[in-house]
Length: 483
Image 1 (cartoon, rainbow, N blue to C red):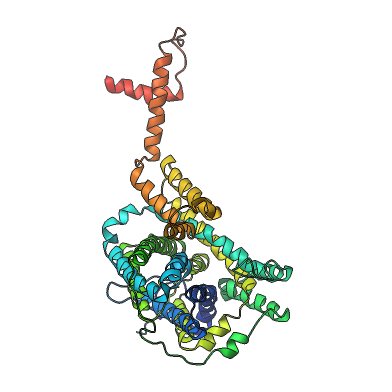
Image 2 (image 1 turned 60 degrees about the vertical axis):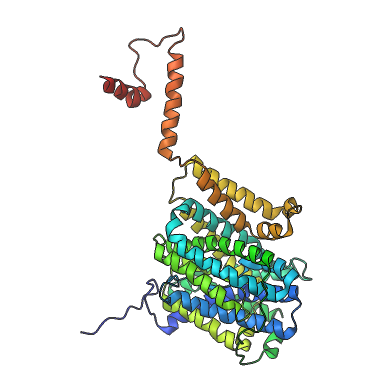
């Protein structure tokens, strides 16, 4: 009897046709490519890298992202999340990398990264014993802040650049392109059918890119300069180990582990309609630690989950491993062929902003979905409210912590996720675990005390007055029990 092949894009083990999978995977690539190449560009400027070293940092970042994604999709032994998630070199570490790189150069970054990756693997191993310390109220808060903290990036992109000091930042044509892209994504996602509906982001990017071409906003200079093939080198940079750099990197790697918990939880809840399992969480953290450690030997920066791609999974519900593996394969190809990667980097910022702002909104809603899985008691609302207030407040007013040590400013001020994770984690440990039922009983006890005191007053209730609902529900059973 012939075995029927699973071709569902909504099943992790489904293997759809290439024609159906290709556009779905390309939108993952386009959503992540700018996030992959921007950190090495920033760090290259900080450490004073030569043009050749800058191209090398970009190349190995793209290559590491492809390898890391494939590794987590399929896994090796206990390593790898085996979930529909995209991993790669990302923004999470940039503030810390800037601080370390400015003082110790790329060599200091890679040495600290090696220790940080090993620390992440230790966290991954022990997470199975402490997972109860990260309930939905903690993980959901982290995911919520991830989404909220990405909004300014999307708006900056729509305005024309990731840097507000760019000459054409906020130009009307940038907003026109960004809004046309956004409108196309909305129309395709809400009114489209089949593959068009599921590929709404790439449809929006194609329309926005076409409009950008007609407006002369696309620059192909980087494509002409890029080589066709380049093979990465082992140890292209030396490693140096400095205590302060290692301490900063270890802290950010531990914090990034909390973000990974949030992103993987958002993937399973938003895309698979179930909770994250402990082996998946353990494998994700172990694998991310291993790839971060291994990347240091090739000059690639630390790896993490990509929240924008989590949003795509949550929005489309496409969880086929084959689809995401194609995206990883494209990144792998781009890593060996800088020209291929250069083509993808010609997409203007307004196009990327218009295409991804809906994705960031979906991440936020996934965080809310995680939160409402737990009780919205006064205790939990306090945890969420304070985490949001402190993290987003400090991010909006960085001058408030300018008297702190520089390493602490870079750790806390540059990433609201860090503040949110620490605040939610600590409050969850310190505040009494009061449930909604406990709060209701406490109110009843306060009401009972109040009624007892009023009974001592001169004004007595009529002997034959109708009993209140409170008396029916609570007083009468109490009397019966005293029988």
